[in-house]
Length: 228
Figure 1 (cartoon, rainbow, N blue to C red):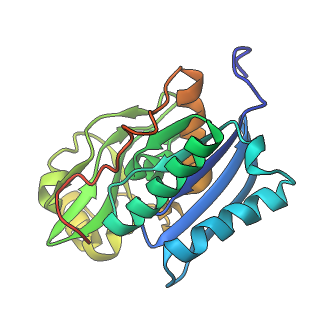
Figure 2 (figure 1 turned 60 degrees about the horizontal axis):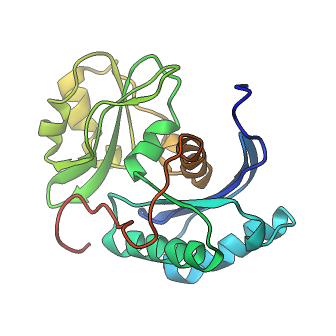
Figure 3 (figure 1 turned 90 degrees about the vertical axis):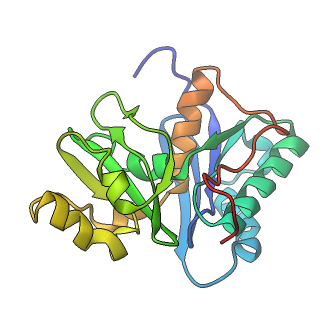
């Protein structure tokens, strides 16, 4: 471990931008707890109970947190608003740092050590997808902005060996396989989830680099206008 990295930073990570809501807690680079549910129930009614449960499992209170990270989209407009609004209010009240994290980046982060490009795909409806391209490996790097576009246009962004991930594959896997061949890797569905601990870990790394967001300027990244 880098001697400059702090093992004692308790970071809460939250994502509600997809139907799968996730809350995670890390202590430095160590996993503490995670609460992830894929159920038909509004995020507004389950987010705070999930946060309370995570803290109870860890025998902590919100005052013990050092910072919070939150998924800012793209994804469900309503879901993003709930997560971002809740965590902004929490951090403002506690005077704790807040870090906004891309939802598609959090999904790609699940596969960060692959030696391939990583292309997360989320169904944006209206015959479009949310996606981006990342470079896996020891240095996980973003290769494109978060995008909202037809699947064919996203696939045109790929230049090299790639693995695809995200719940958009439920609809668009045949298009991907037709374009890249049956041997192209499609990640196991368990990696499709924007996990709260991944959000927290990305936030932790950014916080160590001196990056955090302003309570008032942090806004959802809808990528496109409209409401889902």
